[in-house]
Image (cartoon, rainbow, N blue to C red; front, top):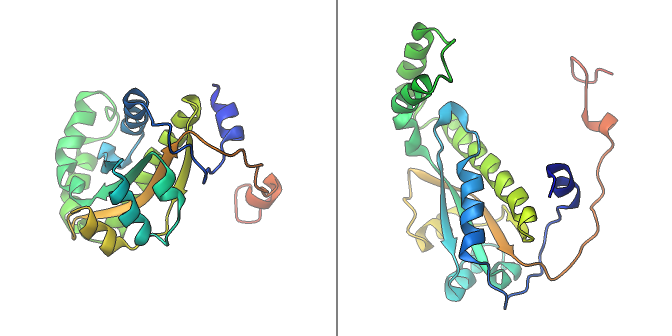
Amino acid sequence: MEIKKAIEERRTIRKFKHDEPVPDESLLELMEAARLAPSGGNLQPWRFIIVRDQETKRKIAEVSGDQPFIIEAPVLIVCCGDLRALRDRPKAMRELVNAGALERVPQSILDEIIASTEQMYGTDLHTRGAISNCYIAIAFMVLQAMELGLGTAWIGYFDQDKLKALLEIPPDDVMVASLLAVGYQNEHPRQRPRKKLEEIMFMERWGGK
């Protein structure tokens, strides 16, 4: 499927064929799509918990607004941002240099970036960066799912603390970014309304035409 077609035809699916499992091969393809996504500093802070157990999905639904399709979907992917990934920044920078990706960046700038890592750890900027990187990986998975004939639902409503306790996620150093329900769709919803380009696109400055 062409990427433009996948973008145009993608829909949020909330009705799944619960008796039609997602093949392991397809699940690995989704993970590979996420693995290849870009991330700031190539830190790759995303971590994914694959949930297929029905009872676990039921408990997740309980702390996620009792949304029934969480239970119905054959697979639920819990997408997490590992804040500890920032500690690997010096290693990640060296890898980028060795790969030739930062050959035009002066060494003094690289040294400054690495030196600032410790100051950034634990800040709001650090957390937001890790989570936003996860969203990019999720978007890659959503489009790969289209190629595989799978439907997805991106879920952002859940109790962070209760979900982390349920899945034994480290309480301080990992944040749940989103949940992604995956399965073969059992509905064909119409496209939701979208704003016109002129409502969302500015030129050179805010409001610029």
